[in-house]
View 1 (cartoon, helix red, strand yellow):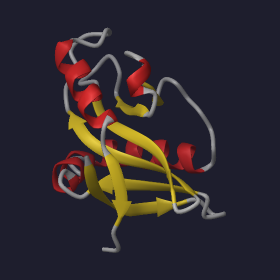
View 2 (view 1 turned 90 degrees about the vertical axis):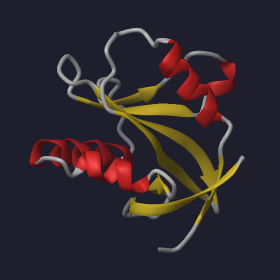
View 3 (view 1 turned 30 degrees about the vertical axis):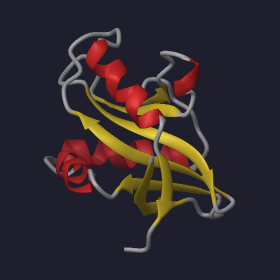
View 4 (view 1 turned 45 degrees about the horizontal axis):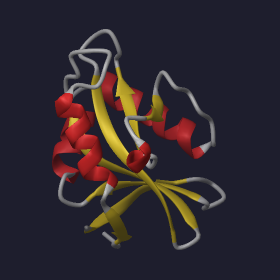
Length: 133
């Protein structure tokens, strides 16, 4: 399924980009901007990704099956409201892009429930084109 995304931020060398799904952009950005605390956490996660660091506590793959290898999650405040922004990783125009696809504002369990698995399996099928905003 083809969808569109917009670039939010790019690494200094231009090889990695953080994008947002055009359809879900408003909901995702509203979540991130709801408080200074959320905004700081989002900026921190984005900076880690753009610098090429992996921190499984903040950003990691969502391994539920082989068809969902490209799905990851930005993890906000584990043990508290435990929000997630599910992402798709792909190569596009010689860039490695991470697209913030769908918000899941309150994950209630440690394990992925049917609801989370359904979201992950759905977004794993998305293919993206970057549009200029």
